[in-house]
Image (cartoon, rainbow, N blue to C red; front, side, top):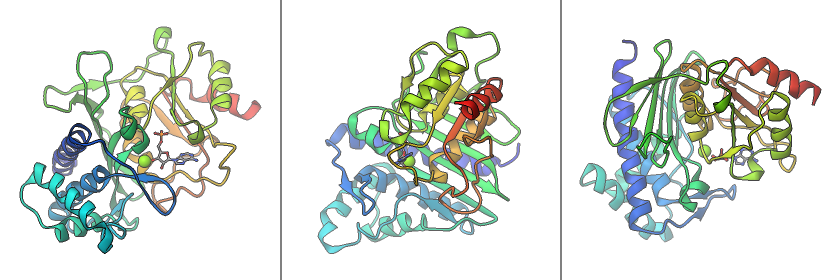
Length: 321
Ligand code: AMP
Ligand code: MG
């Protein structure tokens, strides 16, 4: 199997990070600190990035990691207690470490896109994480601009099969697998098949400002989706499409933030997980998402994720809508 070592190491790291995140949610009421761009970050975001970057830097020292977080603020003297907290949670999962190790691992995620690199969202959907809802740990390997490996940990996801906490993994050309994050058998998953009208549902963000909910509803209606949307935080939405629980995920630009550009770590792992399950991922104009050039997808607008079959209909609805 291709990328066997990459998958094994990345999967183990994501599971360890998920354990840290769930411990934070159980042991403390996670508080949000505010980053300079006003987006929230918690001790779990930092701890998750530290654990995953440690594993990647040891196994693949030459691969840059483009991660969402950096340790600049955490290294400030007034943040000493916070760093101590992050260090304790990391120790709870991987054993004794020093605070300096933790900040060094986090900053390993400050890499830039290259011929081969990883992209990481240590907690995607931090707002969902804080609310007690969905969030995801999303890690992907990109080579020559193409997604090669994706690991999507969704510690709070329950798709009605009696398991809470699901891990999706995909390797280019080899399908998508889903397994309980707590351990158990992996099963191959497929997107919604033609004629399965019961699962012709669509998913979108809980946060109204991360999309355009009225436009999303109109497009879904135009392609024959009559059920109300299922709202879910994070790339867990990609998991729902990959597992055939929804046929469409729409993320159209918010009229409030017309200049917002999507980030690669918010989509890379989810995109390969859906593609390898038979689905399609483009921007709202049908352009492939650019995972290669930079952390911000400057030349893409919005994201459309589907089971493939309805993708052209969605594009037509968007053009005429
Ligand atoms: P979701 O949980 O799907 O709503 O997505 C969470 C992600 O939305 C965060 O990781 C942010 O990077 C991203 N985000 C923040 N602001 C916006 C925006 N105006 N439009 C789209 N995505 C955004
Ligand atoms: Mg995110």
